[in-house]
Picture (cartoon, rainbow, N blue to C red):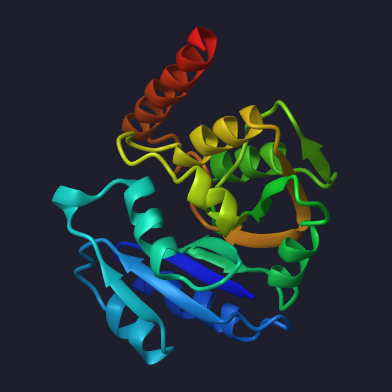
Length: 225
């Protein structure tokens, strides 16, 4: 069984398209849990229209990892798909392709391809196309992982939940930890989503600096272990 956990903050522009695509999957999810971070627009109303279970997290309590842990904790699926509210699964096979990659018990997580929209910023298009290629791979050392479009095993999450005390890149931090325990990560390009602003959000310097700080922390921690 699969549960879908979606993080949102003011996603009314994209959420209806996101949830419509989730609703037409050939592998129907057991449930959709949406964790909203103090949206001021119609995000919550759209989620309720689609029958999502909606949880709330305030700004004062928010971290990307804490929001995910909150949603996964109440989800009932054995596999947990994770999706950003501004990402749109490319077709009805998205969940099928993610789940099919769990071919062995040592696969802890799978992440899929991210593609730009025609109106995406050229820098975001470049970064998405160069980061998320067309070749499937199994990772045993490389801890690239991305929770805009991913799926994890619940039992692995119970062993290793997402870090709640870092300001982003909780996905790579988690991947590095589970790889260190002997698990593997799979990149599955056939499980693709549209991601308008890409992974670097149009060269947003503040976001880039935050990501760099966290990756340096992860790398330095690994060097000490």
